Amino acid sequence: MLINCTKTKEMITGKAKLDNMPYLQIDRKQIERVSEFKTLGLKVSNNLHWDCNTEIICNKMLSKLYFLKLLKRVGLAIGDLQYSYSTVIGPIVCIVWNHNLTTALSDQLECYQNRATNYLWRPNQRDVLFLYTLTG
Image (tube, rainbow, N blue to C red; front, side):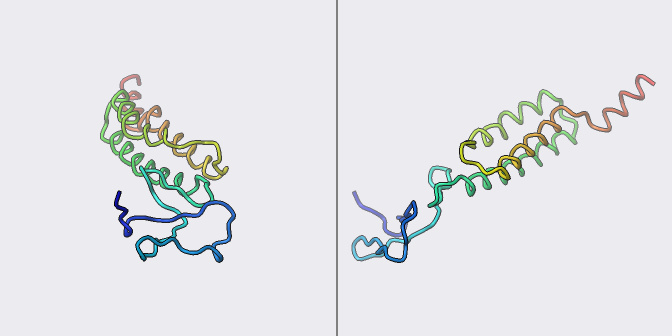
């Protein structure tokens, strides 16, 4: 098997002191040492915490929430909004594992999920005015 040295990365996990560690070399080419990298859509850091991965997921979720907000603003039916949520935003949220999340990141994820719930279940002001004119 041939190893592509330009794409290969080295990451040392744990509490090892990096000052004394020699750099890995393959065919006299030094392999780049990184503190975090992305593999198979998952961001891994050398301290094995989920902070960097969860921040990426929060940013993706935030952009998709804007998409959901626009769909609601145009007047899409609630069933269609729920379908959009379950196909576009739901899979992003399912990636997060809550085991080692900090309280701040967990609260941020919960805030975004609450915002999505508001988009799905809270009626538009335009809908409320329409219902008021029908009944009043």
